[in-house]
Length: 239
Ligand SMILES: Nc1ncnc2c1ncn2[C@@H]1O[C@H](COP(=O)(O)OP(=O)(O)OP(=O)(O)O)[C@@H](O)[C@H]1O
Ligand SMILES: [Mg+2]
Image 1: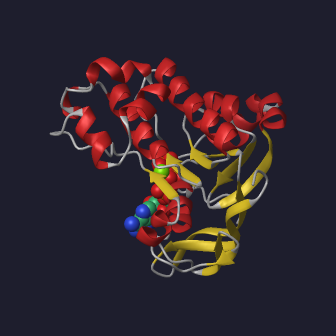
Image 2: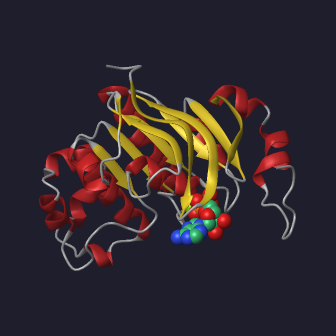
């Protein structure tokens, strides 16, 4: 039901081996809502998604999934309705767009309802689609499986702003119409704010600010200046 917390980080520390990259993270992914996680390079955004997905084990704290603490591996969470879309294009380049959809058990009708621009491209090998078209196929494949939760890591890396907007709007619509809980990591902060309900700003592994997209948007210049530029080499800043 909309408003339910589907996936949640609770006082979560995570990282690689025993080195924690992210510390004390509290972050809920809520049905029917889009949360955006933003922050400079190296802040710990991908590490957060990997841990929420079950690819990395927490160092301390917990990940709750569908109402209970979990340590299940990613493939199991995926079977239970988690969709994790990474910055690498997840389409199979040698197969046609249509075959890519079929492999994901997604109908052409469902895909073209989301992205009508895919219609004339169905017979083309995915490797010959533009980057934006490949990501439309990726999103169509992911949404066509009716996930409960979507984690999106820089879906729009290297794409033109108009395509970014198109992809993010499709995700937002799915969230609102079907109650999908979305957590997206995005470099295009302004575009992310247009589709997000809540925003979390991460710096050096900690949430330094969070609020509604409206609140964060109203002070975006200050936030960008204070948090969104990567710290210079050697500057560890306040612990
Ligand atoms: N496999 C790994 N082993 C050890 N350290 C890693 C590994 N992957 C990432 N890190 C480190 O963890 C920190 C956070 O990286 P992470 O990829 O989560 O950042 P990010 O916020 O996603 O950055 P970007 O915006 O550049 O994608 C960085 O200091 C990075 O060097
Ligand atoms: Mg990353």
